[in-house]
Length: 197
Image (cartoon, rainbow, N blue to C red; front, side):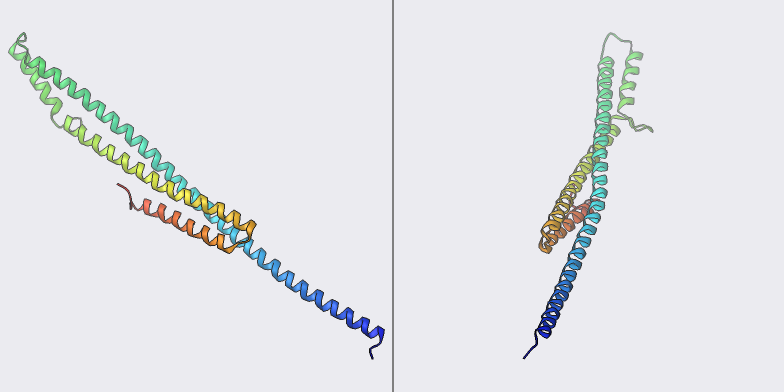
């Protein structure tokens, strides 16, 4: 038969063992939670850096599109002004009220406006330059859109990682990693010129 004092010692020892096991279990659980939080926080930081880089690229492409569009517009405006001057010179050259020498001067002026020059201000040169600027503007606009797709995916990934922290869900982390990968791939493809004009 067990003495009451021995029984008390056995019960105390069992309680102590149970508390030790529970403490070890809780410590392991806390360590796992801490590891999860640390990894997700690191992913959020990496995602934020990637987002900042992609955002800078998107802003740069949008700015380039705008500037190239303005340059194309200015070039075409200058070309149209030269065409108007050429038309006036041609009309003046056909005037019967002018002396033959004056008509020749107007014909020469019309030819000069159309002819290519070293500065690139001939009408055909201006048209080619304006067309090239317009294409560059369109390429930059398409690149800006490609970067924005990457930006959006990275933003969504960061939000999902924040939700994963609260939900303590590796599944949500997995979804966020997939989105971040897609966003990064879209930005990289855009940077390499894949997928736009």
